[in-house]
Image 1 (cartoon, rainbow, N blue to C red):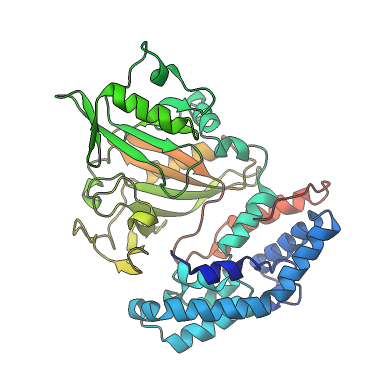
Image 2 (image 1 turned 90 degrees about the horizontal axis):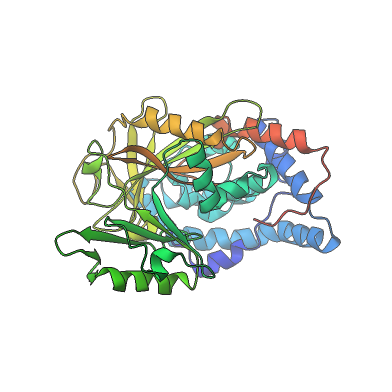
Length: 419
């Protein structure tokens, strides 16, 4: 979701984790206890006076700064939210006051998470923000988190365990480009190619080159290249940052009608406390819109939540070109709301097997595709984001995080980065 620049600037001051006078600190629910524990962790791991001072200043200034961010967010988003949900702008303002100043959340997240379409005042006690989840990832994730973040190490771990991962042709590093690009002995694979930055985000820089056997050439958008020219193109880009060269995947026939052509992916969030077996707590499907390479939000991608009890899809949401709710796909016309994701058990099984490889990572958002070859994992994300109206306090997430934090309280703290 696009957030106005002035709101982004104000949100840099947001850090309410150590302000114990905020009312949510008085609660006895697991969610309130977890937020208090997180505040204590943030204070303990700020090991020098300047870090503690910055934390205090940001926290104490939030009622003033947050009020300005609240007003700007309300002005910018409330009209469209009313058109989508029917919730009056005055009621939105009241809910924003409770959400941001009484509970200390970022006002923009009220709109990002579609909380204007939820019974927010009744459910706010079990809400955790994306800001909280990022701080909790720092506080609770073990050493294996680095293997999840590294595409190369993650790929190796999955292959060693015999789990299906996207076929990779090469990892291309700026200081050590492989012979697939620099020499004559190895040519490019005669297949559709997915070329993406190793450390990329939101689909930026991704290219999908489709192979045409009749001409022995590849095409992307309106560009067509023979092998030598395409190899040089990949080489030039990979001298600036790391890339991975993968086989482009195709949607399974059971779900292909939900896409105009791009790959559909599923985000499954699983949690672990390194004691009990991992469990999946939430999932949504990301659908491409128009003829785009990826289903990311910046390309108008649509997110539809999957009910874990019934496997049914809820209506989809998109932010670009504007906030929209979709009961049917705007490009293909296929119904989204109420459709049963019959493939769900296969996806869940793969996510749990994957998390078992990294049991000391408290939570991971898995990106999995349901392809013509079955479920295939694309990557794991330790900062996995929230989807519409997601109340983590209703899931196993809070209890698992509490278990990890409490078990580590006796460990000497190390300085943790600010999320």
